[in-house]
Each structure stands twice: as structure tokens, then as C-alpha cells.
Length: 142
Image (cartoon, rainbow, N blue to C red):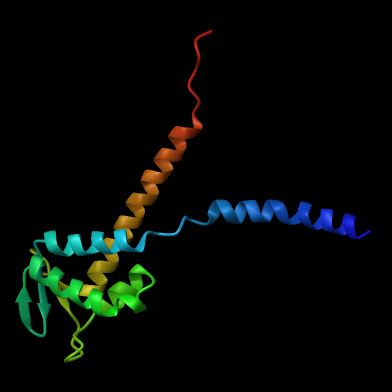
């Protein structure tokens, strides 16, 4: 009787586990993602404003990298990185700002979250493209 219940349970749960496994993305490489975000800042033509002082992308990335090193043990996700290292001044509490070439100002954390979304979308698109290419089997000449 127990064996029948066990077999029935496995039979019922196996499809659910398989669906969940397919839908679960492989864990994001935190270090690579943070390096990408730091490079976005460094290569950006935006002006980064910290405590009222403007900085170019390279200067801003150096500062954010230092804060990353300071908070590294507390950072588990890219969102943690943005929240702890790229949101506001620890000294004044003022939010870090970004001014685009067009003159639009937005908070640095919003700017970085957009960069993170674009990065994740590009990775997802690349994975889907790769997966669809793997599914097609080569046709052998008859």
C-alpha cells in the first residue's frame, strides 16, 4: 500500500517539478553582473552627481566600486549592489543622481536598474536564441 502511494505521489509531482525546473532560471553570476553595471557607469557619457558635485563615468565607477568592496559581504543580488553602493551618500543621505546628455536628471539607482533590466533581457534573448538553435536538428541527406 505504501509503495502504491509513494509511486502515485512521484507520478503526480514529477511533472510539476519538471515544469518548475524549466521555468527557474539558472542563478545569475553576481560578480559578472556587477562588473557589467560598473562598466556601464564607467563608459557612460552621463554626468554622475554625488553630494552636488558632478563626476564623469570613470570617476563615478571608481567610487561605486569602493562602496561595493565596503558592502561586499552584505551583497547577495545585483539589486543589493545597487541599493547599497549606488543609491545615496552615506555621509549626507542625498541620492546619487545621473544627468543624461539630453539634460534629463534621474536617480542613479533608477538608471542602474534600467541597465540591469537591459542586461538581463539581452541574456534571456541570447539564451532563447541559443535554445531555439539547439532544438533544430540538422537534416541529413538521404
